[in-house]
Image (tube, rainbow, N blue to C red; front, side, top):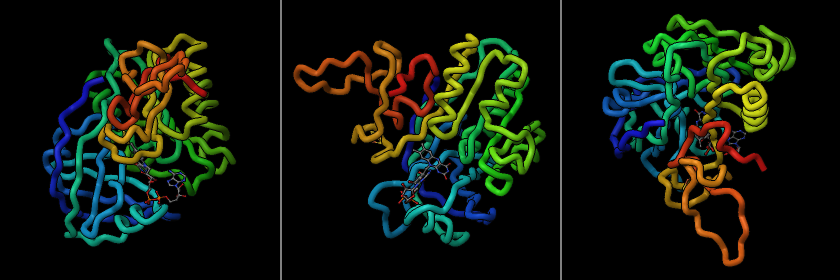
Length: 273
Ligand SMILES: Cc1cc2nc3c(=O)[nH]c(=O)nc-3n(C[C@H](O)[C@H](O)[C@H](O)COP(=O)(O)OP(=O)(O)OC[C@H]3O[C@@H](n4cnc5c(N)ncnc54)[C@H](O)[C@@H]3O)c2cc1C
Ligand code: FES
């Protein structure tokens, strides 16, 4: 799971597109990040005026000197970014985090995205195509109006299957049910809500399938220093860190910082508590 050296970059908003009912796709000109970003990496953004903590967003697509972020308007930071004007400047630290690894040999992959987890899949689909890996992309949401990012993937020639919990578009059921219904792949890549990731990890373990997940815990610094984003991982796994123990604390797992040791983890290394 390779990492790259992140840098603080001055960037400019080059386009913004509203996607009802509350999503935005914003394009940002920043050549160094656009040229070096890999699958599942993210940026930590700040706008003039300053956020208390930088806003982490996945790098969705790249084209030339620009990359896009796809996000939902939630609170202060995403609202300010959504309503910033084309031509406004901002600062980005990135690309941050490690990356999904391609399979060792060409084969068959399933890329599973729940909701905005789709943002971690475009660069992966691009890279898998370059490695000659056949990919099924499955994107799910609660209902048809909450499906985002599908046409960005389709526009670049990727085959995408959608599923909705309420059956209003595509397969009626969850991403996990759809993945179970597909031909057994050599590898599963996933990003999405915690319950979806956990169920996919269980499925992969039962079936003996290699599985990599990108996790999105709540972040503080995004830079590996505040320890606000730790998750339990198998003791001795490559991404475990020397998180300090309290005296007499008996812990049979390590703690990994999702922002710096992830966001991608091997399913077999994650300890679900
Ligand atoms: C590595 C990483 C990558 C991310 N990539 C993306 C991305 O590509 N697109 C994207 O939309 N978001 C992404 N997020 C989530 C995004 O950073 C958060 O949604 C962020 O907190 C929003 O900031 P805000 O100031 O607008 O809202 P906040 O003030 O932080 O939140 C406002 C309210 O909304 C709730 N809330 C915020 N985010 C969510 C959520 N995702 N689900 C449910 N409730 C929520 C909060 O609990 C709070 O009550 C990512 C997070 C991480 C850690
Ligand atoms: S968010 Fe600060 S260490 Fe991960």
